Image (cartoon, rainbow, N blue to C red; front, side, top):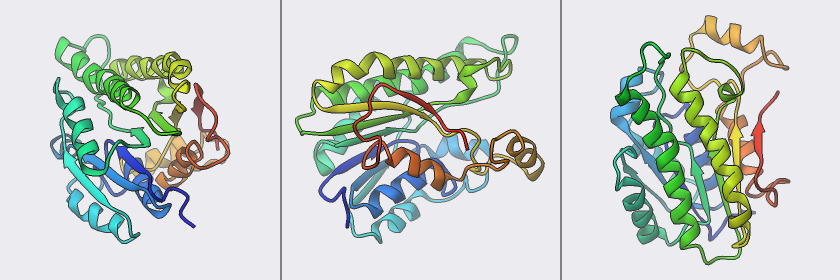
Length: 252
């Protein structure tokens, strides 16, 4: 059974096989959805994380094995026209999406002393502006009976993280965006929620850091991208599919 057969999904930020975006696309395709995903190789490769040099076109081939239609494009969402151009391209490819997963983000280690205009703007353009505009375009053209948006957020916005200043404040903005849009979007049958996966093993931690961070979680382990994707899918086909306007911080 494929509950998302005939549905289309747009997923941003699918740059690494070990990433949450990859796991979400895989889960959507397994459940029958056609998936249009984005990547930004220039940014991903600059991070030096595990798998950051992989060819996203191989991801497309992997997702296609589940029998759905898959398309992808590289996009720098910090450019003013990129969100609109991306959305129009997705619509042209598969029709208006029923599902939007705003997973793309920008993050560098910056504190108050090191922060400058360029870095602050870089975080805002992708984490806030692009997310907001994609939600706007999804809403304005939506004419189906049921739609779902999940914005990826972070628990780092809940406390003081001095070396993650622009990231934390822009993710806090994503939380507020989700709350503000929920009542209006529900009038069109669209649910919108923010999801924080918590500490997740996506290839950016060495073994020592994995052990340190894992020890702080209730289960004393890190989540996997597959764990995160299952939680995200619960907002679309699971027990939370009718829930809207929530900010969920995963605790395992």
